[in-house]
Image (tube, rainbow, N blue to C red; front, side, top):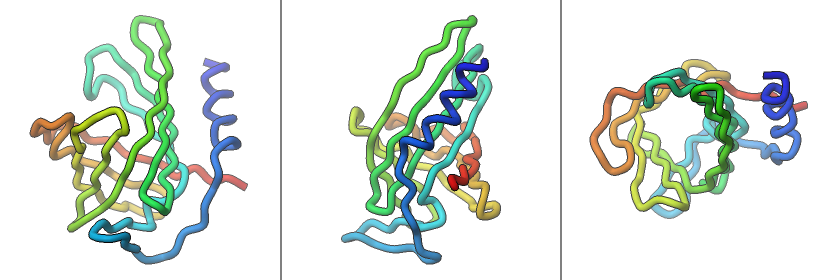
Length: 142
């Protein structure tokens, strides 16, 4: 667990923190809620797969791209992987498209406060799914 904790502390150092504005901004027909820009962390236990605990650190950039590092634990085995892609918002919904997928994940989202955003799935991996709920927590980098 100590190595995992160190990894989660070191990763933000390598990620570039971008400044962001107070309001949403647009690029073409896509909108980007500036409240979602920055570095975020989260975790979930058995919400998608029984017996699996997942942790992540994600950086959403102002230009609508993201990078995320996942760490998952199942039966005392730990795996890590990264994902890159595009994100945008529209009509109170959050859209995420991984570079390795053709399917857009869609969530309702609510900014609970400047430090916490809650996501509720609408569609995952191209299929309707309204059962997955998780929160992202802002990581402050000095």
